[in-house]
Figure 1 (cartoon, rainbow, N blue to C red):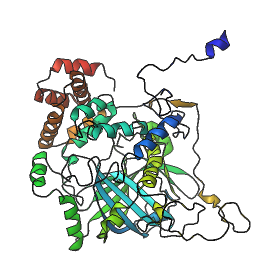
Figure 2 (spheres, helix red, strand yellow; figure 1 turned 135 degrees about the vertical axis):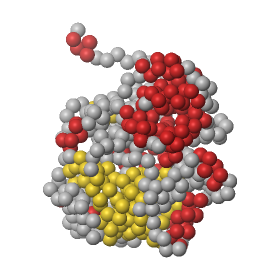
Figure 3 (tube, helix red, strand yellow; figure 1 turned 60 degrees about the vertical axis):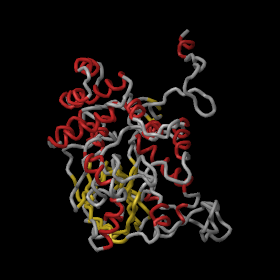
Figure 4 (tube, one colour; figure 1 turned 90 degrees about the horizontal axis):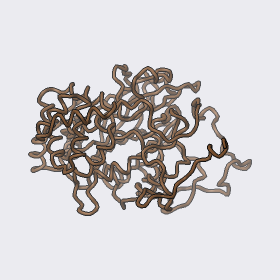
Length: 499
């Protein structure tokens, strides 16, 4: 009886239930499989991999996200302050590293106006002495979701509807009403920070926690932030509308013109550091991409200067391929579930979008020599010679560097598909709301009410109002008043939602 009780009973797939492309039922479409509650995501999660693979191949050849962009070349000079945490040569004192940066909007197409409300991409390719490192982030410090399992769904909801080709608040608020952790990012996107005035006066963020590894293999967790030396400037919805009527390329035009006249924009790179034992000091999960690290000091890692415009936008800006998987010794991904998915997905989408040999293109090729047994494929312009295309080999050895092994992460528990333990979905959204000046709070309320007022479903509308009320009662009440919503119903709905 004990043996029989331990055997799970599986029901046949219900009619209309979610399946994989091979027809097999999906058991969990909300959480990636991880090695225990705090471990990395597992490659054996075929549903996650399939979702990301299929999502990466939805557009030809425009980027699925970040299609509208502008790029520039420059350099990064390190202060040396991170050398005690990371053996990466890019952080050595005085190291002068060439860079290429691509700024972008996320959701809208290649020729969409640069005045639209949208996160802005801030992707930096460092051509280091040890290979290319890509710091791929946004202007905002957090993201909508914490697990890559939901990334294709999130973007589908924000993209134009498949039947009308129109972006529709009914669709994306329907999705976000099931995703309470998005409240923080939605609050930032619908504030004036959702429309930066231009790319020069825009901060950048790595969003995710990474690991910095020292010479002895010890690691700390780190978050990266670009601080614009030009200051930060944003547009209200009214200002953006007026600007768009005259110039919907304003951000690219501003960046190009500033560099052409010798006013080279600069950003300081700051890094927050947490030791592994400090992760449990918070009442939220610091590896959650929907969270910032309040109160954690910053270390200045260096300064970036952009000083040269592309000579050919297609060959440089559009063929540039950024991926969080492009890491160098001394920098590794953390167990952040969204980052773990991006490590696979971004490289995969570039292989599809640009081609198998994307890394041979001049804009993507590292400055140091590539010694690899990867070969052939479409449009291969490499110069590999000889008969040995395998390793190990005595006739043509390509020795490993044992000192460059990945760091060791202690693991415990069993594989699982479950959300993180400490979600704390609403508090930081409320803290950001209260940090805004009164005029910017007014803009936030008006911007949200404008889109949420288009939602036809009472359940979706009141769920979203409850999320904002959970973040801050005044915040939720003001949107409710703008929509003539029932305040008591908002409070009742919020009372049934846990933080």
